[in-house]
Length: 253
Image (cartoon, rainbow, N blue to C red; front, side, top):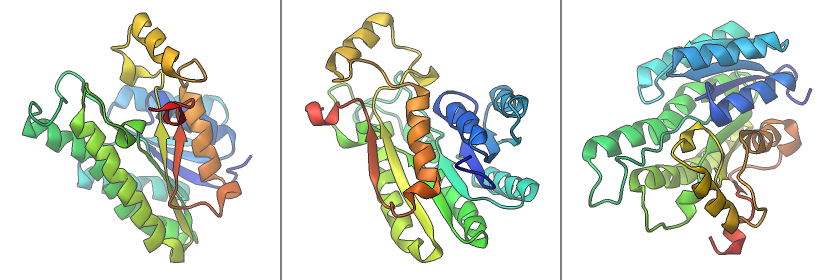
């Protein structure tokens, strides 16, 4: 019960890493505010948490829209009496329209930034005052190893949005240290989730061949890292980048 008496707001909690974190955090005692733009998957996550004996509320929310985030944060805080953890997991990666800068349309840039970057901004804008009311808390942002590397097959809007999250995380950590709020960012490597639905078995095999641990990450691998950052065990860790990539970065990227 590492998160007993805490409430976590998790964006993009309907599938993949967000769903895994919601289920894990609930098993560790947290009440979960499930945010997702997809009503069915979000409700499924909340229902599964309740089925396992936890407490959860689903709020439909497009994190790229400030007014929707404001309402969602207010709803979650009202239902459970406050917030202790903000987990900015929601993100999009569109390989079919997010390319290098010479080929990516303005509308794609705007939408990717709205979800991947501004979504975290809006959650923090309205969520940080709730954390302050509780005497502090933890902010966890989800970046990507893509933000630390260059790729010949580029997704520049995605990569730039995740890079910006690094700077945002550092600023949050310094500005709100006085409020006993910690902010850290996780950089996943290749994770086997619905976001990677285009990966064939051949592609997965090729990726595993360059991963020193010789496998893809699971959603739970990332969730357990987030659990550590959410719990009091990491109370002296803030402003940090945690790379969860099976050793890719130290093996030359």
